[in-house]
Length: 361
Image (tube, rainbow, N blue to C red; front, top):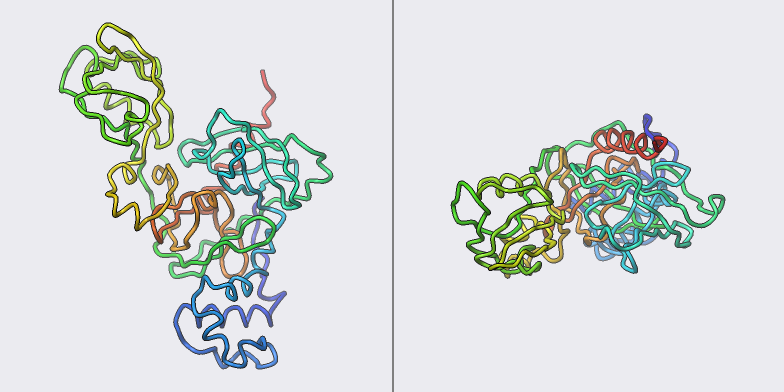
């Protein structure tokens, strides 16, 4: 759903003025703006306790202060399970149970379910996919529709300027992160790697020269000297053919390799790795912490410095007025998170809903 956003500030002006002042103080380190009337100021702020209560923007006090913004979408955010594991958040986009989430976190083999804002856990299925921006459209098909208590998120048509204060809500109205928009929307090319080097050959099977440790190829059991005959059933003609075929794959994609090892023909399934993950050092990994398996391959992203867990992507991103301005799509670094902007999400959502609702032939 998309329309011009409601002015959250005008309907809650006293609370909004306090929030704006607190945000300004936390981000700039300055004292509260004198324009805020003393009677609108919470007790803990008027007595100077704000210096310790919200000494950082991720403090409990700050999270409580911005919770009214997160509560505007409390019926629009769900948790997504693949098997028994929470793998992402999801954003409700229709009253009849369609939800957008992060595609690459779904295993493809395990059953999908969602935990609704009410706490009820219901079954779901993948109704459509957009590999180019790592989106999946889920359809709830469990429980009673009358008890779902969900509400489609309303995507704002207003793009926030650089430096904007942003809020990431979780399920049931809780705030899971606060950050600042760092750079204007930009394209991020996909960088999927299998984790192999080939001997240079113009014809015949592509022969593996080296398998990178802890890559998708290594985890699948590929070995130096293996000859790759086919990728996803496509016959290869030399190493260049193999490289060009793999370049089209996104991080997180699983490819079927038909290989010749000695005199034996084998079938292996290998998952493509993101270049940023495959190339990082042990020290880099410690600094960055856990990241999503897919960090690249987006037509447009909003970059912000909110610290999110990998399984907290897929939910909405709000501006300081409570407007939904995108969907978080990847934890890309220690203080680097990506979100797909509303304009892109809306276009992809319309196509996916049309596909999902199209009568089957």
